[in-house]
Length: 464
Ligand code: PFF
Image (cartoon, rainbow, N blue to C red; front, side, top):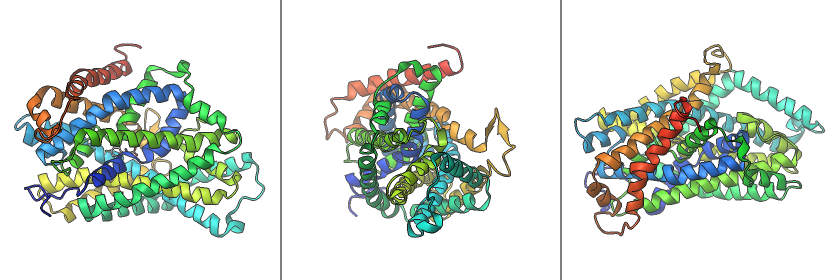
């Protein structure tokens, strides 16, 4: 217990715990559900290259900045700005993050709920293949079957609601147990299992006959597909996937012990996140191509396309079970990090105890999420520019995360003071920070300019 910082705040206990928890936040549906389908829709390898550039040049500097802010202030996303910049409006960046947490969790836990439902279905197929198997159906029939199943599942009322509430419930239970005994403990168990399952699936994917096309799709760039909008999608995806731009990693940073190396942690987490996204693509695209299915089937890629493929593979239900288990676990270590942003804010800024803060945050996000589950059913008519509630919630992080990230790097680069950031990154002078000139160049110039250019392009003020 001697290692708990002086303020008696809960904290992560070990370096592996920090990385497991932060990588647990980063690795999630964004890697396994979203990355493959946005890559599929935006030109494969060319998209991947732009994505990698954003992760390295923008994502890592934002992540390090969030860690610096959280660990120096020892506070939640809003309180950190209040402490480091008293009586200045910077805390609004943290407020935007807390509001963003509501939006992200409300749609994210819904998708996590679909995953849970598919997990149960695959388990049922496995134990009662006669009853639930699909026998001699053609691909067309199968596709139709799942498409219908998926559509009616989404439009249905009770199943998405129950599975969404189950995922929210699990999230609340883990967050209630605290940082070290909840978040860190579960991340340390779940992340290695997740990696093991994914590696088994990759081995299966790349050894399918005809898999090579899928591998080529992921690694051979075709720049003709790239437009200004693709660049925004890549930037938004990098932020979403790394969990940066809304204070999640300010909050987690505040639980990192003073002796731990922030730069090293950020690079490890970004590397792990990118590695998992790419190998999730390697598990999925070879199978998509091997069975002659189009790679750009959008959000339904893992919920429609993959089940079709699983049914055609030997022991398909087993692979399906593994895959959806993987997705559920990955989702859970991310949902807890989003809820923690709100819980830390409620408990430290609004003076609630942790239990009350978690229950209030969980239930209010639960209510918002219920509206999202009805996006294809009773609330299908509520649309904005042809996007339903779910699609609006899903699209908005591509805007508010980079915007949050912009202010975070500007804060650390221009307002926080070099001596302060150096002190934090070097653990008060105890470690060498030879990379510091590169870091400061990225946070002062390159990252904010890159984000600004992408936005100016989107609103049409410049064209590239
Ligand atoms: N990074 C998570 C994923 O890729 O699934 C999603 C996420 C978690 C986004 C936490 C933002 C966040 F603060």
